[in-house]
Image (cartoon, rainbow, N blue to C red):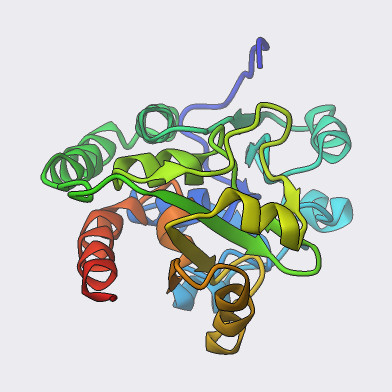
Amino acid sequence: MGREVNVPFPPKRIVSLVPSQTELLYSLGLNEEVVGQTLFCIHPEQMHQLKPRVGGTKNFKLEKIQQLNPDLIIGNMEENEKAGIELLARHYPVWMSNIKTFDEAISMINSIGTMVNKQAEANQLINLITTSFAALLPAAEATTVLYFIWRKPWMVAGRDTFIGNMLAKLGLINACNGPDARYPTLTDDEIVALNPGVIFLSSEPYPFKHKHLDELKALCPQAKIQLVDGEMFSWYGSRLLHAANYFKQLLVELNSQK
């Protein structure tokens, strides 16, 4: 973001405003140092139950954060609203990530590890993640895909997103490749015109279920349609430890569809 953030080293009272980065902090062994998180920071479950919650990722409660007296707040440019972050930054050190690719996710893990004095643990995570992705074989046949994140209106992930980068790692071609929107909305007619070979319906932020498959099948009867775990495609912290194996199985399931 082109700004300097001065953080006491190592920080002892951390508030995280991003679920995937909250999980990363716990994976680095910072159970005591994390003093606050959002309602959506659900992993690990025991910490979700134990830790104070400061509201949502976009509507966090300033007074609750003030009560926690953090010496470091961790956020993300896509997850958090600019106005709220600017307000917090007047009072606390606020470190922000901006992640659109796998490589940027790895860089974030390294940066946070350095900042919280957990470099060895971060290096171990990075090695495990990069090794698992290096062994991931992309789809044998490149085909177009639409990754749906919302319904009414239909909304999909474009190429210039972390989800889009994960799709590329699977060897799939994002059918929605326009430069104007990272998460464009589509009409039924536009979906039909894009003619995707594969459709993914994500579990988040909209909780797509089996009952929604028929809606898309009516529009794209030729497409292979699959419900997918949104965390595996969009959580860019230590959840990546599990993503490559999940993707391997997902490709097997796609290949088994007629």
